[in-house]
Every structure is written in C-alpha cells, then in structure tokens.
Image (cartoon, rainbow, N blue to C red; front, side):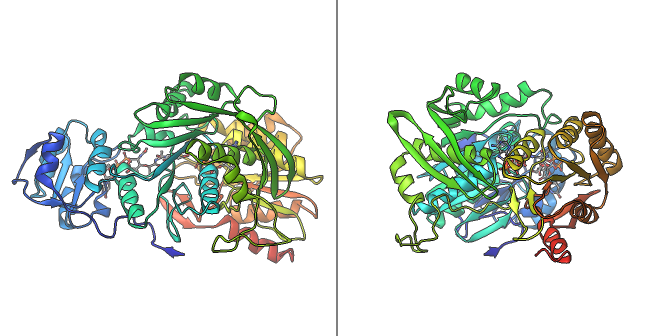
Length: 528
Ligand SMILES: CC(=O)N[C@H]1[C@@H](OP(=O)(O)OP(=O)(O)OC[C@H]2O[C@@H](n3ccc(=O)[nH]c3=O)[C@H](O)[C@@H]2O)O[C@H](CO)[C@@H](O)[C@@H]1O[C@H](C)C(=O)N[C@@H](C)C(=O)N[C@H](CCC(=O)O)C(=O)O
Ligand SMILES: Nc1ncnc2c1ncn2[C@@H]1O[C@H](COP(=O)(O)OP(=O)(O)OP(=O)(O)O)[C@@H](O)[C@H]1O
C-alpha cells in the first residue's frame, strides 16, 4: 500500500476556478490587492498550503490563523479568507483578503464550490455514535467491496482510496480536507464514500457542504464530556446529522435511551435496528454464536427479509455494527438478497465465484486494532483494542467473558487532556469485569500521568477492593507484567492504543505500537 505520510488527500488534477467569481458567489467583502487570480484549492492550515490555494485563517483556541497568512503566501496561497479580527494580520501577507464574519461557517460550502463536489456526488454514507463508528465504516467498505464496488473510506484509523492510504489526524477531517478528498476520490472513479463523523465534526462544521445519502447511529454513552457539558448537549450534536439539510435517510440502533430519542427527534426518513431479538424496531438482530474471533448473526427485517452471516471479530457488539452497515446499504438501495449472496459465497480476487471448502460465509474485513487478536495458537489469547470509554470496556469485557473459561487480565490507561470524568468509571468497570487489572500510561499529553493512574486506581479499588491490581507506568513493562499474570487459556485485553503507532507525551509523539510490542513480548515468552 502506498503510504503518503500525513499529507491531506488532494486532487491530482485540480480544477482552476475564478477567485472574483467565488467572492461574488459568497458575497465576501474584500480588502488589500485586487482579487484577480484563480483558485484551485483551499486549506485552513498554513502547513498544508499548496500553490493556488485559498488560505482560510480561522480563530482557534490557541492562535488566530491570520498570524500564519504570510507563511501561507510564501507557500503559494492566492488569497486569505478570514474574519474582521484577522484582517490586519492577513493584509501583512500582501494577499487579497476575503472577509466573512465566521469563516468556519463558510468553509464547507466554499470548499464544495472550489472542488465542485456537489456535482455528481458519490453515494455518501456517514456513521456516528460514541463507539463503533470506525468499525461500521470498515464493515461498510468491506461489504461494498464484496459487492464489487470500490469505496473511499475516512476513519480515525486511516483515509483510504482503493490501495492508497494515509494516516488520519482527526476522526473526521476538516471540511477543506473532506472536499479535497472527495475530489481525489472522484478522479479515482470512487462512487461510494464512507465517512466517520464525530460529534466534534458536526459542531465544528467539518461536514458542511455535504448531504449524506444514508447516516447511521451506533450508540451514545459517556465520553467527550470535556467538549460537551452534558450528555444532552452531546446528543444534540449527534442529532444534527439526522436532519434534512445533512442527510436523506437514517438508520438508528434504538436500544438505549438516546437511540430511541434520536429515532423520535430525527426529521429524515428513518429505519431502526434493535440488538434485542424481541425489540421494538424494524430490523432485529439475533446473535447466533460467539467465538473468540468470529461472531455469527441473523438479521430479520420488514417483509420477512432475513440474512444470516458472520463477522470475523469478537463480540455481539461487532454483530450490531455489522447489522448497522448492512441496513445502511439496504437503505441506499441494495437488495438484502444481493448482499447475502455477496457475503456468503467464496470469490477470487477478481470477484469471480469459486469453490472453496475452507470458506466461512461472512464479511471479509480487517479492522486494525479493534479487538485485534495478536497472539498465536499457544499461550494466552491477546486482544489489542481501541476501547477508551466506559461502554467500550463493558462491551469487550462481556464478550470476552462469554468466549473464555480462563482468567481475564485487563491492561489499560486513560487519555490525558480528555474527559477526566470517565476515568474512575473505567477503573471500576475493569475491576468488576476482569480477574486482574494492570494500569499503565496512555497518552498523558500535558497531564501528570501519575494523577491519571491514581483516578483509575481509585475507581478500581472502590469497586472491587480485593481485585488483583498492578500499577506499571511504562506500557512495555506493563504488557510484560500482564503476561506474567497470564497462562495458557487466559485472555489479556489491552484496551486503549488499538491501531495507533505513537504515545503522546507533553506534545511529543513517541513511536509505540501496542500490536508490535505485544507480538515481541509473546515471542520473548516463546508463545509466538
Ligand atoms: C479542540 C479542537 O477541536 N481543536 C481543533 C482546532 O484547533 P485549535 O482551535 O486549537 O487551533 P489553533 O491551534 O489555535 O490554530 C488556529 C488555526 O491556525 C491554523 N494554524 C495553526 C498553526 C500553524 O502553524 N498554521 C496554521 O495554519 C490551524 O490550522 C487553525 O485553523 O482546529 C485544528 C485545525 O483543524 C484541529 O486540528 C484541532 O483538533 C485537535 C487536534 C483535536 O484534538 N480535536 C479533537 C477534540 C477532535 O476533534 N476529536 C474528534 C473526535 C475524536 C473521537 O471520535 O473520539 C475528531 O473528529 O477527531
Ligand atoms: N457497537 C459498539 N458498542 C459498544 N462498544 C463498541 C462498539 N463497537 C466498538 N466498540 C468498542 O469501542 C472501541 C472503538 O471502536 P471504534 O473505533 O469502531 O469506535 P469509534 O466510534 O470509531 O471510536 P472513536 O470515536 O474513539 O474513534 C472498540 O475497540 C470497542 O472496544
């Protein structure tokens, strides 16, 4: 796979558009030199400016983007778009300055105009919810591939077009990047695009200028209460995606208070899924069998439609994610039988049906770092997981308990500079759900890592005072300590790092891959 580092995806053959026309179209005021150039791209980071770009200088939490206007000009920007506060600084760049009261509100539409992404858009899928977004996005892409369709993918883990991939910085890119990416996908003839949509992306207008064909909702549970004062405010951010200016149809998993409310309060045509086979929803999910690395399920819908298949991953929650992906595809126009046919027959690399005695019917998906089993046939089973919220801990621990007779050793930490209110709950859930707990550091960022660990420990000790608990700050040493507690038939769940390949400490990203390190440690023990 080609790895393009962390550069945003841009069209290879950008279309030149008239800058005066853009000014007229959006009614921007202007200052500085006359606007007479063409524009071929837009970015809000001076570091990503390419010749021909409009540099959108936004007021951020730390800086006003206008202080980087001169740097943007040096990299070839043709104009600056900013607010009143930024005008003076922006003029120092010598570029024409376009002015609008809140540039962030204009970005999506301006980017869509520059990259012409409203013209013949692909089928757009958007996935939101606290947990499961990345998984559903990968599952959608995988099923589309099995249906013979190349899809573009944008998730926390990576952005992907066919075989080309780049590492993601944010869960959902800024509007400027999304539209550039869509333009690039159009060049590659991608006709279906799956975007993971965070609550922050909706609040910060990153998905403006897009109307999704189908949006899906997984669940809403405790997270991000540093960005949103209450669960209600967090819910309202998600709910905005299920309105007619943002999406045409929706699919909601209704189990739980928030899913039910979303189904009631959405104003787009909507279908519902329940993970309770007796639940009150149009589509009902039954989990038929859970294995350590595969889950079999049946999905029953209106008009006696039914599909039985499997997902090659641990957990009933992964079956729910798969059900959401399948119903989103049905809502976009695919026939359920066609999906069943694509999933339940062996195909070769060219999509031709083949005879294969070892073939297990199901979704052919690999999701990096989501309950990813990194162990071999001997020793303890080791899962590396991206779970970093209370509900994610509950889901993975419950699923593991159902597929093992051995002990569960849970290794985890908590993000620094992110919602501290969830830490004690995470500690408590781990202590209740696992047989032994190892607490370590996980992206302390600018916080004191000892204080983060102390909160996790407090929660764990209060919940189960006699639980075996180790505190090992260094993640590598912590994994080895967890291995020391585990034997043949036991399970180690290492929650937090998932696919990530760094550890963020005081503004620095130190290379660290939990998956690679776990494999090395298993080697050291002779278990791999
Ligand atoms: C809190 C938050 O959302 N911050 C976002 C915000 O940063 P900021 O307001 O601090 O910006 P700033 O650093 O003051 O800079 C102001 C402006 O100057 C520009 N600038 C800055 C420096 C420079 O050299 N050149 C330059 O042009 C910046 O691009 C920005 O437009 O604007 C930046 C530019 O787009 C984002 O990268 C940054 O996301 C940070 C990294 C972040 O961590 N965001 C999290 C909270 C987030 O959005 N998470 C969600 C959900 C994750 C999940 O699913 O769990 C996500 O979608 O990723
Ligand atoms: N449907 C689900 N319900 C509860 N927990 C889930 C579900 N799906 C996944 N998880 C848990 O959440 C973790 C993150 O999953 P995933 O990356 O798919 O979610 P996400 O919403 O994209 O997360 P993030 O917003 O942090 O990027 C998984 O590793 C697993 O522990």
